[in-house]
Image (cartoon, rainbow, N blue to C red; front, side, top):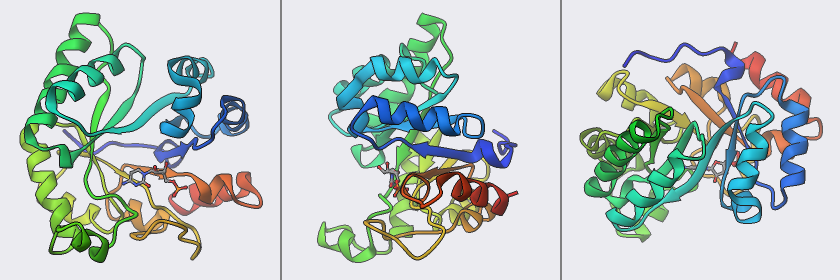
Amino acid sequence: MSKLILKPEERIILALDFPVLKEAKTWVERLGGKVKTYKVGPILFLNSGPRGIKDLSNYGADIFLDLKFHDIPSTVEKAAKQVVGHGIKMFTIHALGGFEMMRVVAEGVRTESERLSRPKPLVLAVTVLTSHSDESLSELGIEGTSKNSVLRLAEIAERAGVDGLVCSGFEVESLGKEFGDRFTLVVPGVRLGDKTQDQKRVTTPVEAVSRGADYLVIGRAITEADNPGAALDEIILSIS
Ligand code: C5P
């Protein structure tokens, strides 16, 4: 796979972490001229479900379904097959679910897309959450640096046949060196200033993109900015 050629604004995925669909729609109406892809996670999905996805898609938005599936292989495979019917652009599973879980998802999504004659959503494996530090990983019994954990999980994800990885801006460069253009790389934990909130492995948009990120997931840096439109413009300009 060759590296994605994307316009700066196409790299931005806005995280719609709102508990009501109405608010999410307001953001798509407000920023839809610039941002094409919107992330629906559990906060919004538990409020509005597939109906919300349909409503947002009706604006012409591409949907990133971020429910981070992590369960036994057969359960996640069946859930992933359900994703195909909803016209989703990309969705997440946890790489920590292991090789077999990732393998049956990659295979199941491929066959289900063929069966339904629908575009295949990208399967993204979340490596190590950007809210983790080396210390919080050690507390869980995962020793070594977060970068080493990400590289190890990426090697398993590659064998399992997933399309992309979610990682922090600190690991994208190493992933590019190790795996070339094999993966679509999606980076959350993006900040313009020093307000990190609950995120730990944080980078600026320009750092993440210059190191090889394809997409940036951005939530509060835009939605909680004093002037969201200006924050978005600043981000687009910085990666242009
Ligand atoms: O508001 P903020 O920009 O921190 O939001 C980041 C979004 O990306 C959240 O919706 C979060 O669930 C998601 N995410 C993350 N770290 C990952 C994967 C997804 O922060 N590794």
